[in-house]
Length: 242
Image (cartoon, rainbow, N blue to C red; front, side, top):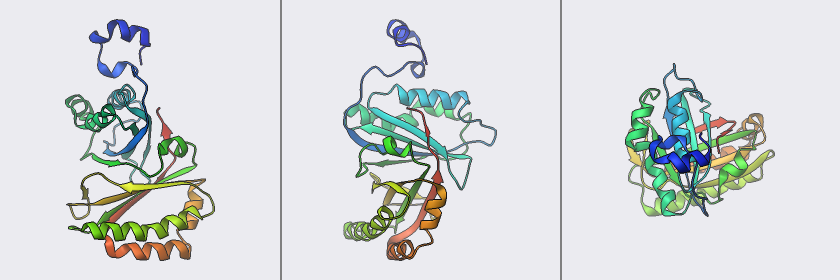
């Protein structure tokens, strides 16, 4: 990224992704989570298309933090996390991934459909804490098609039992959750549904795996099953960009 002085003088001549942010961000608003499938031949983070995408996010007003990690179940899908503020500029960050510049650049490394989740988590700026965790769990719960507002309320109530179990578990460092704003495609049944997203910081992957064998976890998950059309879970050590 070029020095600020150079950008201030010549910014109008330079590609946007080469210059740093020009204004400070404000109060946390939401987190964007993007699942980006990449070609086997693509090298992250050195691929120019990836570098340009990261620089675009870094220079965008409203961005508070950026991290990424390959998915544990598919190393050729990168999960990108972007904390943004509650300003109108922060809302504009949602559109970056579908902008013509991003689409044109990413075609060199992209290998499938990018999915973006927009979640105002109940704990602000999750990346501030998760960047220091030995393992970050990303969990996405896809509700049944046509779920009613009451179904969503009942699911969130049932989820409270799981969240309490997580927060009481040995090795748990941080937990937050929230609804994706809008509908998300359940990739298994290819239908738009409501989606609930959780992030958990663990001191290690082994600690998380141990928790998954406990009666508290199994019992809590059992109460969620009647509401769900599917779910996704991944573990990774986040790589901080900003």
